[in-house]
Picture (cartoon, rainbow, N blue to C red):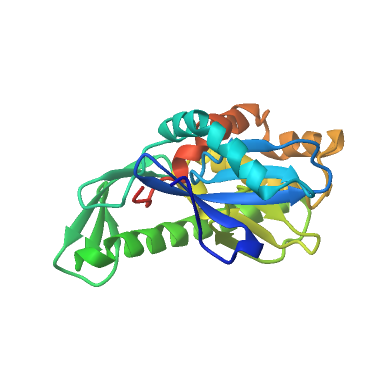
Length: 243
């Protein structure tokens, strides 16, 4: 069976099933869509179908079925899932850290290239993720304030989340939200992302003036960092995933 509904039929939220694995199939009807478009999100493996608002869902799913080979090939090309486990090594702000479960202590500690995590083992992933989010927030807050001072702008709240669509976003009131997974990227990538978001306090668009402001704040062309995220960023989403 290729499709399985997870909610009532009117909501058309489905699951794509093939090769012993299940992935969400998100069906989006768009009035401006002229034809059906199919994609596999490299960040979570979700299968996404965009279709004209008046098109038949039955016909659309039949078309998706005809693309089974392409979908399976795209899923096979996804990064490997990296469940957080005792003994694995992760990179945090460019520094490799080996995760070690320990019978002593109550807090996660960083010691000589090791990330010491207290027992029990079933809380390992949650504790490591919580520690990573804390490290990300501290570093991103510091970098944001540094660039804000350079730009002569004010910043609202700085927060972190785990969005699928953006590495960072800046609201009109000055609040900036980042992906905590930037702490897993090289430090210069995190830095360039922060410069990008702070520059939005000067220009709430992506005009030529905005890009000039980013480069002025960063002190260099951010293209290498953008290219890094384009090429490697999807791998960051797979840390902590089981499949």
